[in-house]
Image (cartoon, rainbow, N blue to C red; front, side, top):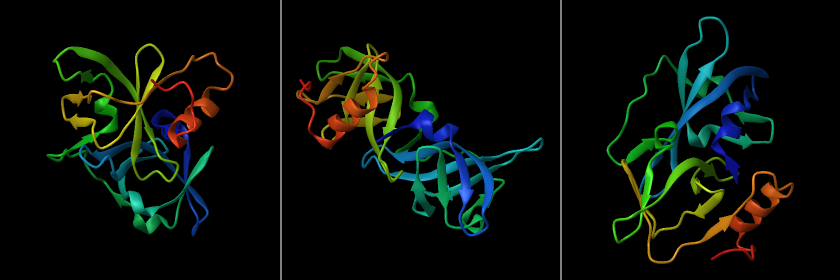
Length: 178
């Protein structure tokens, strides 16, 4: 599980050509299935341009770099277009999570994606808490609705075991779930 901010700061590299292409700028994900449809790429340089790539083209989403098979899988000079049942990750920050009774539960701070960069797996909300996404959490363009029961873990940003704790939570072996 990886924070979307971490992927946005990682270099995008083509395996076949062995070149640095740029950085991932954003991703479009399906609100119902939480699957990532594609990524927006920002090419480096003075006259940078935007490109798009299908999520299946990502070979590896590592700690420092993201690998794609070939630069030929990128479509350049694309525009950010929204789809009916999808949202851009950057636009989902700040959206509200609502409880079934209509009360605001929290505001979404950032998204967490799977290690293969194919799906959104969790939401960080205020007060250093993370909610694991499942089929019962309803995501809509204007925010999300929580079920009666949900998995949540509290994490302190100064906790030196923060990422180990979060990874364990998503793997299902965390004891601090309520």
